[in-house]
Length: 639
Ligand code: SAH
Image (cartoon, rainbow, N blue to C red; front, side, top):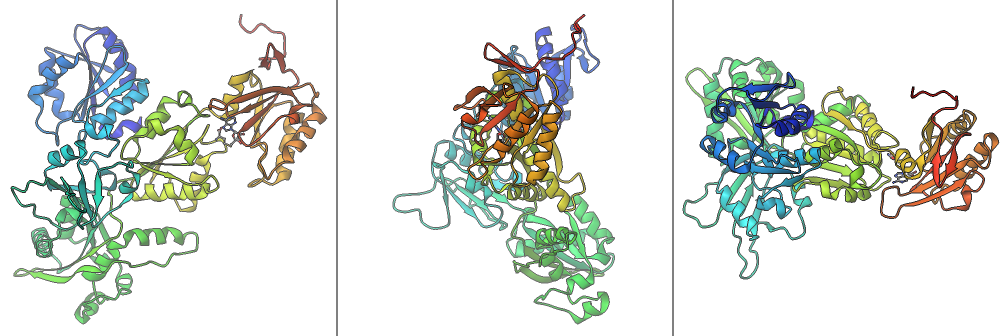
């Protein structure tokens, strides 16, 4: 299951039959390898035996796994892993589950190793309680050493433990953010400890920790009592030109020197940009591969459209543009806007590319005996994440948290960002994780919501778009896929996964009995996006075909007549005694249920929170239960 991809490979260890029974199905969902001692029988080919002591076995598999799940006493686990632990930057996530599967403990490597998140995901999966003891989790704050990961920021130097400790002690932390996304700032709890800005904080107020978020290389003075850390958003685009055959070494040292000279952090480099005829330049390719930088190339004609500080006639003569390094750096820094522009091309309305940021470093020439490289650096407004985005289309069921599938819960907890209508976001608040980017848009702005989700995913984030009920039934899922199609989506990037939910008709039916026991259909009475003639045709067909019928969106303040017409259509084909249930806010706090019939249904309140269930010609009431028979022939199928 892709939800757990970020933690793979995962190993799980059980030493008793009970623990094996608990972990085996979990491992199958997670894609984890389950190890048991030789003394236990193997019930399945997916379980592996280990030979000898668990201690020795653990030492063998330790380097090959990013996460370990134990169903063992925490004391035993602590002793087993103690000799293997190195540091929190490299240790795997350690999870302990109690033998009854009620508690999932994040034991070690909670932040960087991901154990806190994995424990939460597994807990949602097992309907268990996650046990997380890190301070930031309980303050509802993003962990400071994970803050930039969704945006692809690189971690810089600093006293991470010191700043984390100051946050946990609820001290004021100064944040100086000069680059990168500020989305994380918009999702902090009200009483967060951060002070944003350079200035004085007011009388007697002093920060007790500082976070720099910038592309600038800071030197933290040794011995300072103020703990400081630095994150580097990847905003620097290095434009490069060189003589054919220039070595990787000269390119690397030239970029390093230029960065140093201008106090820029190499960690903040997003990528390299050059002219297309350099796409096969070995030194550049090797350098990009080693550093894992993207290499963007542009034609001479494209580069020539940019005004640069240092145009060169010689360069124009040689390659057809007045500038390679400077123009390519500016183009690189605007790659996001230009890629959006290109995407729009298919729809015939190409956006004007807006070149927003000036060059940070004008053309610098670095030479050795036979080689020469030209470098310029521009800073982009939006950082490069280096991540492939994904969108989960999630149905959250009719209302109460118990009615959400475990997979949907896990998906909501896993993503970087959640987008939905505010009522639904409130319903799933308990499933949210600190540090997530939550964006609500009004109910009428469904298309905007879909576009925003796509924008964030194209940028590299994982996004959950939530709908009530099932997301694929009058929900957001179709809109997102339609919008993706309009943006010339290749079907893979961003990746899509759909999580089904209990739709209103199932929820309403469950509250009144078994009205959907035989052939049924759903019809939405909203004619905002569908012509009323089409809806009428379907109502007639459903009534004529004797389908049990669920009416969604039955009546709103502006649409009052549709439900009256619907009733009349059904009365043409069905008896006025036909059972009709009006279920409002199923599984929500203000749920109301009215059992009536086709003739009298309009004597009751029906609104946009109601689902109307119209029975077929065989549906009947028995002791306030609405029942549609399983079949009509008198055959005993149970034999
Ligand atoms: N995607 C949703 C449907 C959205 S259309 C789903 O699968 O359930 C909105 C309509 O759904 C409402 O007008 C109402 O008719 C119905 N509805 C949604 N939630 C409901 C609930 N909790 N109780 C009764 N009807 C509901």
